Length: 213
Image (cartoon, rainbow, N blue to C red):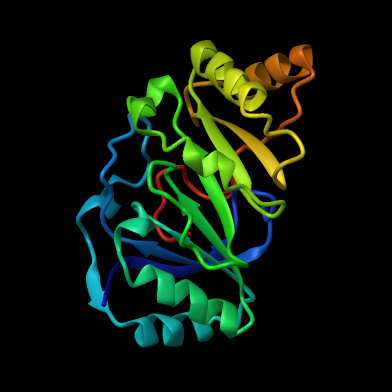
């Protein structure tokens, strides 16, 4: 069984799949408390569903792209058979994970979006650095950047771990409403950093506080 916070059909607002239709399966519970978290309602709210029930709800949207998110989805053991069965049904499966849980057992074929926590999150000490050794050419690495210290941290991680060319994308995302996108863009340009600036498109399409969109 899984504890599901919500399942909804929307426009993907992040990753290299930005702009595409996507079904989001948001799992309940997270063992991090990032300072800028925009989904605290996923810490506790949810309902019990079997893997088959989730698959049925996803199929109703007739959408090829599915993102498994949270909360922290890797806290729930049944997320692994869910991902496997979504792949078997022909879906493109994205996994958004907080970067502190090991991704070694995520089924091959899932696109892993690993969120490396920067200092302003308050959770950078919990990063599982071994995840960066497991990157494949289809995976993506994300840094949520709140200030210049976070940017310098991300830049150091990118260079120290040799991330360029080892994954599909390195994403730098400014904390919405705190760090202006143009400021982060200027830092990236000045340093010729091999990254993709990621603005959360869904926060511009809909209200920044909207749920299930």
